[in-house]
Length: 181
Image 1 (cartoon, rainbow, N blue to C red):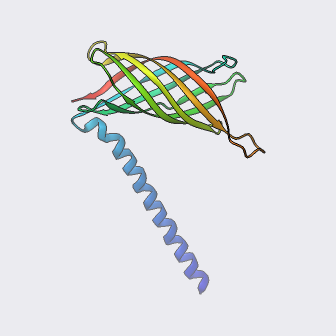
Image 2 (image 1 turned 45 degrees about the horizontal axis):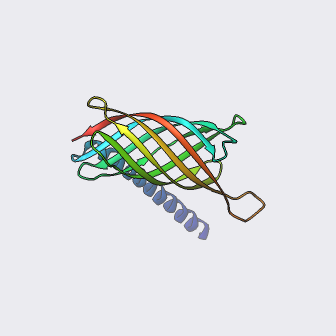
Image 3 (image 1 turned 45 degrees about the vertical axis):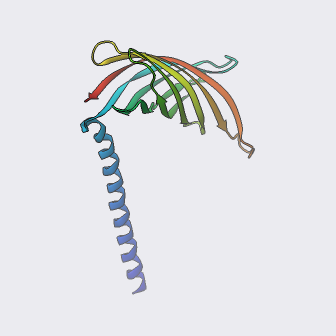
């Protein structure tokens, strides 16, 4: 009899977890949809490609990413994400997930200092800072150039000591304005 009560509780617990999970996913997609439909906001998407290396230029490698920027029209602050891949010299690909905050200066030419956090799927992460220079071409297209420094934090096992290296990247890209109101 006690076993039936435990199984019943487990089923209701897993059902509640499933409902919570679906609500979280729905909320996430609602947040993604909001910038495209709301007035007074700007959403840009694009591609970025370039080179990333340590500061001694010993291990240069290529990277590519998708750029998503979001900002309120009345603000000069933009939030961005650039999920992408980095090709290492040993033919291994790693994922890169930087989240960036930038402040825009200028009207025709935008110069944007950037600060952010990143995580690489090779179990490395850290902080980044840099600058982006962009200029609108036509009504919807924005070519841009960026340069960044990364403070990469990692832990080589079995050591428990946190280590770091400094890396930098340069890249060029093209963004498209999805929503401008």
